[in-house]
Image 1 (cartoon, rainbow, N blue to C red):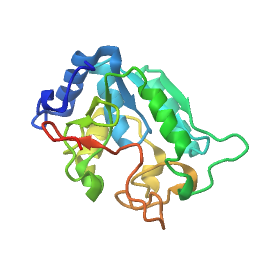
Image 2: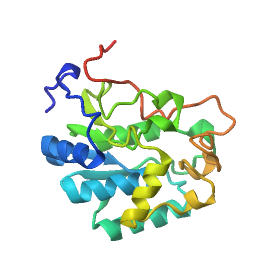
Image 3: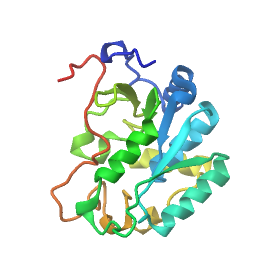
Image 4: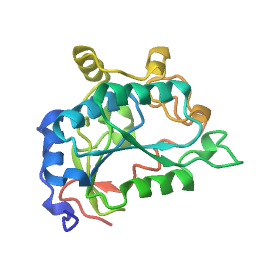
Length: 222
């Protein structure tokens, strides 16, 4: 699948989450990677890949400063879905992450590159509702930096859609969502807040450095 180009990608925007995941699993098998941060989006996505694309590698990036509730969600996901979450270490021995200025530093980006080494595509929990920088997200985009497709199956889902689905399927979810945290990253740089306003509080930063340089099907790279 690495011979694909942006113009080869089908338009999947009319498909549901299960259909997108099934398509991705069919196309990529064990070359598919789901990056997991154990938020509400991943409650839905891990459930879907466990059912429909079981060869998918599920990977988390551990900065060494995750919330205890994140670690609890991690265990709950593995227990409920019968999956093993692989770990890429982005911690800094002797120099721990202390705040928003550290977020998405070289260690975290390097961990992502290791997670995607050999991958033919990856899956994210990006949704258009999350922020202005994600408002144009498509369910299948081209990751120009890595030269592989990037699936965003939840692109058109709202918070209400997520919580309805989680309740209907009785899925495990991150406890901090019940404490006003809509979006959850590392403990030093995450505060309660709606949307993604609790991320990198007080900073000009508006987007995670792990999600850049994606283009929609048929778009020019440049």
